[in-house]
Length: 151
Image (cartoon, rainbow, N blue to C red):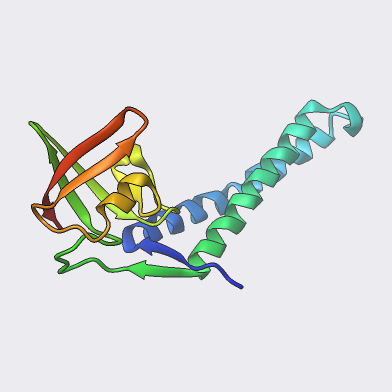
């Protein structure tokens, strides 16, 4: 059974751009392999092993991205009153304000403010409305937030 990936339109564009960039590197990696072959005995050729490993990683990532894009469901979040996939959420904890976008696991990048709907933060936020209190359990303990806005 095929897995479906939920991604935003922005995430789709980012993956398409990464795919183009990765495919453009295929020739460069093939050249590295060719150069390494010229060094002689392949059984003791570290450059050849490194180039083949790089090729394997490159091809694996290309296949992963193509699978995601071929099986993607694009998230549309406009006009929501509750938090769901694709929602941009502003949270307040005392004087501090945080902004997160709830996305599928493929796009998650907490350092960029994109949290997975499968993460503790994403699960706690899911279905909440403006002015709702949210308690999120983290390794440092429980933290309470108030939902300020949903976009």
